[in-house]
Amino acid sequence: MPTRKPNALLNKDYATDCRLYTPENPESNFANLKASLDVFVLAHLVGWFFKAIIVRNNLMVWTMSILFEVYELTFRHWLPNFYECWWDHLFLDVFGCNMLGIFLGNYVMKKFNMEKYHWFFMPTEKSENMTYLGRFWYSLTEVRPYIEKLEWHFLASVRNYLIVVWLVLMMTILDLSNFFNKKMMGLPASHWLLTIRVWVLGFYSILVTSDFYRYSRQPGGHRKASFNMYLGHLIIIVEILLFWRNFESLLIRQIFHE
Image (cartoon, rainbow, N blue to C red; front, side, top):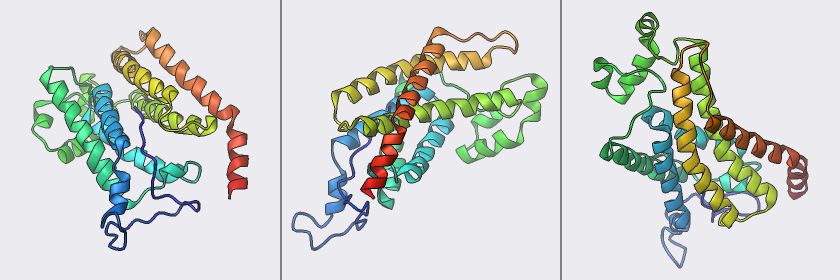
């Protein structure tokens, strides 16, 4: 569920004042930090709470969390609200709203005994007793036993690897589409259309991801995609086409703005 707070520190030249301590400011000695703490911070936290419940795998959701910060750095020349200070990326996003949302999502899943999704490998007694870093290295070095036992491992076959990549790609596009098409249509971040889209697709993503997980576990040659999978991909394709249809006008506006 993509949410993003507008960067209150952004000027017309896309430059940001990234000082945490601003003693000359009459309102607050931490005016820059204060300007970044608004209702969109809560929305950002709720978004990653739902993302944790949708993906149901800590390594996967942390991968998406870090990857989205990379996307913000990559696409900020098109989307000025992606311009952020280093402390915003680290302490308000990755180790702030993202981390707290993921922890709360994990708490709810544990509280209600919700099924976890093993996107990278099926856990063993050995891996369950490892740290997250240990599990990461385990996932890269202990591939052969999974292949021999015909158990799920994302590196056991090209198909398995592409399934994991495809999930990350689709979830990322779904998030980025919110920002790019908002820019295309000239809508404010608080517009009711965007709010409806976020909540509807957020809840629907739970069903689509669950079906995609079942699909990934079906034996080769006997896989059958569900209606939710088809409709979920159709929604993403339509939003991509909407962006592509208006891509030229975005470039023109960007050129004249610069």
